[in-house]
Image (tube, rainbow, N blue to C red; front, side):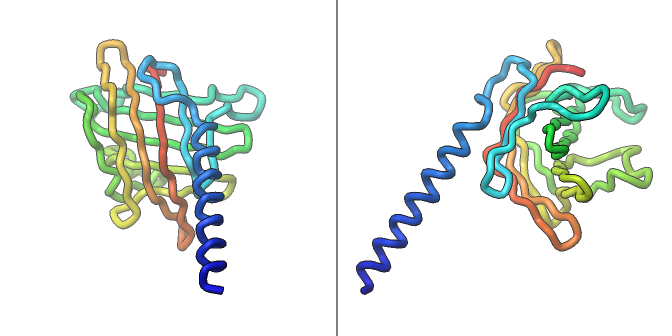
Amino acid sequence: MKQILILILLLLSLVFAACKKDELKLLPDATQTGANTMGAIVNGKAWVADGGTGFNPPDPVEGGYHGTYSYDATRNNVLIRAYKKDKTGFQFYLRNVSQPGEYPLNTTTNLFGGELSQPQNYGAYYIPGKLYMTTSRYTGKVIITRADTVNKIAAGIFAFKAVHGKDTVAVTNGRFDVSNF
């Protein structure tokens, strides 16, 4: 009986590993050319930007170097928005991205209520009716693999855990490659 249980557990782990590999194959390649792509594994399922909805839908991925705020002397902040036709999406904000490296998503930023006068690094995932945000407790990181301030290209990988009330979301194997707005 014990051998049968071990065999069943082994088979289940192989099935789950195969499913994860299949989901990873659905993600866009991790490029660094300004291809305006983004994808990630969200709670075990592939999420790939394919555009917004509506009369004048947004592009699948918008973003890049963003320095229009008066407090931003470097103009090296990165803002990325990605949309899917099922009305889910991502948004990232990273401060002072002047070179490749690791950028933590470990502070609480309120997207509403005026706090954006000086936002901190954050990651957000949203579904209709819910906005999941990184906080000081639910954290993650973005690793910038290309930080080209001349050609305005930002590329990298990311992972984070975010919260909405008591509900959480796990984002892994994320990748993006964006050029300027």
